[in-house]
Amino acid sequence: MKKECFWQDPAYEASDPLMGHERAKWLIAGGGVAGLFVAYFLLKRGERDIVLLERDTVGSGSTGHSAGMLIGDLQTGPWSAVIANYGAEAASAYLKAQEESQRTVATLIENEGIACDFSLRDFVLLNDSEWAIRRTMREFAACHAVDPRHPTLLEEEELRNEIRSGEFSFGEHLERGLTVNPLKFAHGVKAHLMRHGVRIYEHTPLLSYRDGVAYVPHGTVSCGQCIHASGTWLRDGGLRNYMTTIGITRPLSADELAALNLADKDMFLDDGKRSFHYGKVTADDRL
Image (cartoon, rainbow, N blue to C red; front, side, top):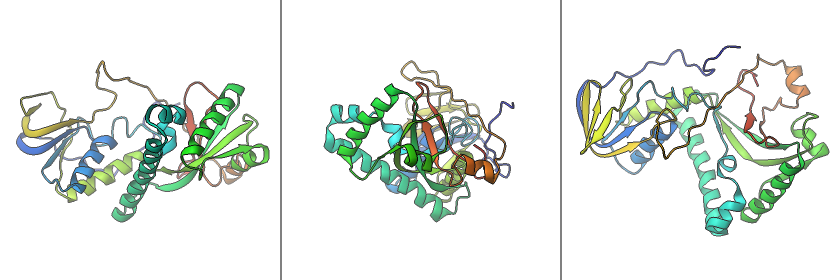
């Protein structure tokens, strides 16, 4: 087993580090998907004076080590808590915002021609224990009350039509999700931002920030607003840090994918475990 990041982009050329002094209305610290999309939406709002700093290279942190899956429903949960805390109307608006976020990402990839193994795929929640099934039923009822279009419960033959495994007895078909090579996706978004005037400096960690001035190893940035979009490397008492381990198989044959009923490359989550086990089939047929 090799312990290294699976996603690679060998043709990528990093930007130069910041040397000297910069001025900007907006400074973004962090070149992962969060920082990149802060810059993206600032541009959409008409802002143009933007500097983004990345301590390593764009996408090299949490983003580039993720599975590259964007599933709105998966990131929300539990729906029963969302409804209890904010009401059904707010939950419905949030669900629509999630769907719009997927459309935004898909449109950006298609319009900019970002080569990142992008596709839209079905997403399946899998259960193998009674407590997990009861939880799924509860959340199904809550989500269905917000939007009757989805999800759909899966049992027996319907479940086998989604994924062929004796490990699971119950499932749920959620909304379609988006899958990418996250490293190439981040690099493609960076190129889009730079074409629209965002100044991006890599190998430029933010050392400190005070009184409107950001200090980096070989310079400074004077700015009106500083937005931190840092990953889990940042040790902050108010943030929880999580470690994700992604295991990648060898390329699977067409027969092996067919045996699992994953030839259509669905994405899935094993919700029967108390930890978070999820997966997808990559563009080169690895699980």
